[in-house]
Length: 336
Image 1: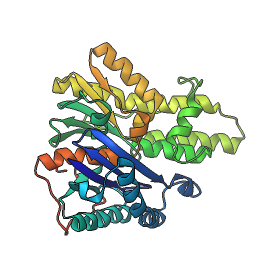
Image 2 (image 1 turned 60 degrees about the horizontal axis):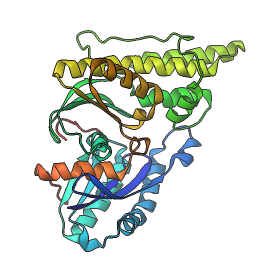
Image 3 (image 1 turned 90 degrees about the vertical axis):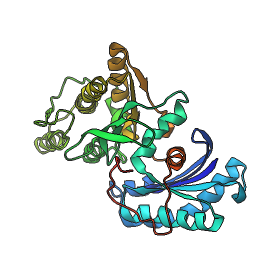
Image 4 (image 1 turned 90 degrees about the horizontal axis):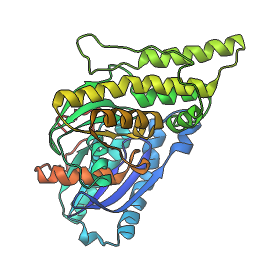
């Protein structure tokens, strides 16, 4: 089954062709990161306009790279939430028109479910159940992946997402947007014990997280040093900050796996590219005798392949979208 998939939830326009859920025939992406870097973050109106400009050309490019004709497509898939509402609408409306024109089913896909399924592409042996840590610029969740389309949230951030914190601290430091990769590079060689950041525990919700205090503490530290003319050890600051984020995430996902009695842990989303978090998870899983599934860096960010992969399993579960399919800024991963 060949699925033509589209992703446009934030600042990447992506199209891909995926066969039978696991074989990626093509995956093309048009990134807007350089444009939004001027503003230090994504400007929703600009993102939506750039999606409109790019998506049709990417659809043709995905087909050409896959070596297929339009008649070879069996279904069309699209992210329908969560995300920037204008951006998501572009993908949804375009996908509806393509599905209608080709006379094939339309499959709506939850964006974070797509991130989880990136692991199926990278690890052909991976099957549910497992616990997945989903971390990106807009999402921080610990998910019990019971089956390909049956999921339960075990823990979530109460405020900021982990990736958002990296972005905002990086913006204050003036080292670039998106902030995850620059912060990761800056942290190399730094002393992760030099700066102390708060660690938050949510009463009566041990799997939940809170990053707003951590973010504020880092920004205040930077501003205070600037006002006093003091020089900060920036590699150590970045290393300490990454360590604090990892300390919030890793013990919780390991405890979630233990409580679920699973021996498999996966990670998904843009922040899954962070070297400190990956390293800490590798150590924790090795000590616990658990299998760890990490997507390659190329599949950590937003892409169309992950949407096409998840769409295959949604299709098998009977999920379809009509011409009345809407886009959603917020969408429950459990309902999909």
